[in-house]
Image 1 (cartoon, rainbow, N blue to C red):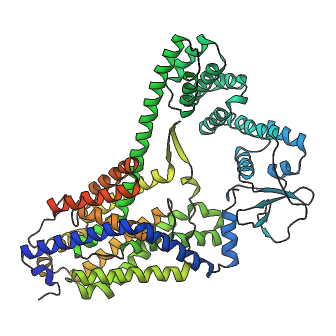
Image 2 (cartoon, one colour):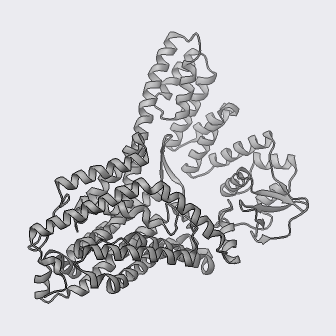
Image 3 (cartoon, rainbow, N blue to C red):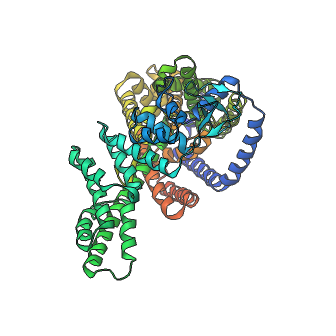
Length: 583
């Protein structure tokens, strides 16, 4: 007889056992969802105590402090650069530099951010320093940590005149850029400072503009100026342009005009029509943003659940350590980042490309070790494997706390994933979220190909559908179990690598996603990849929509109740696994 006694249970016993475990798991999930605020409070306090007892090395502190500075790491800075010249200059020279900035757009953006974040300082007769949020002082432009604080160290602040010159100087430089994105940013800067705007600057820019999107933005800005300063006829003409806008700023202008007394009847009617049109466009953009957020959430859930769908479907193992395998992938990404910063600083922006295979391999090897040592002797004993893997999850979390500390570690976004794509004034799509959606689609396609078009996939499907017959024709089910568990663990590592780009990386990272991952697998159907896809889309989008109306905690509870009701009516999930001995 095989060491898989569960495969010889009667159909009625197996179905009852399966239902019992699923309902028990979902009840546990409901309890965790309700108790999570108190648990998070205790975790934060324990993390704080543990953080004070773990001292990082000087090199690590230096790297973290440098990352907390606004100055981009990839910005080429030479001695006597424009920011240094600006700090050393007097009022008149500073104003002249801002009116006609001699350097690059990037250097001016950096100056704006440094002043905005109160990080730029002057001392020792014009020497430039950077002071980060941890009160660590760095020389500029070398960005070397120094303990010799100048006696006359003073923050670089701006008078109202210089601040206005800085804003419009930044907009002017961007308007002269060859990049349409930079010119669009310039229009946004000018729109935020419309009260001090020179209309001639807009008309000149609109005359020379070739890009349709930028030209439209300039025409809307010109219409806003006409609406604020023109007579009734000019205002009505401007409203015909503004009615096609979805800018919240424009809506504020329209509502402010409607609140005034003694409005011309024709103008009031035009204002009401424009208000309805703008509100509809803003509402549409808002819901598109919500759907995009739900889609990105679904992608994260799918990444976290794909590996679990394989291991749960093939082995019938409720792997409570799956979340910690996600955490290991995130920490592997953190280690690759530190390696690149230490040994390949010029290529730091590409560390993520190397981190993807590393995260997969580290999590996959860890998973195969767990399968060999912990899970294999417990096949067919569901409660024992649940408790054993829960213990493994606690061990892995404690090991990470001992090695890296209880506090979160910082995994920085690569430059090419920073920022966002601005679809409209009220709709902005972050690049990292777009990348996660694309990354999930690629991983899904590769997994489908692996399971359906390769010899390994054929063996996995054979063992999943009829283990005894697969063994009878010569397939080593034990080897397939180990490799499939490694594949599922590696997919968890890829999920951790992706999650490191959008959230905090800490010892409790996996606990955030393990329950949702189980929900996706249970709703989609055990071992069903496409079921996991549909379930993640449904849970991700519906969860986002529910959060808008009833809040995050109530949305989680409602989803859990709906899932329990769904499993009661359809215990096999959206797609039932096919096979002679499938229970």
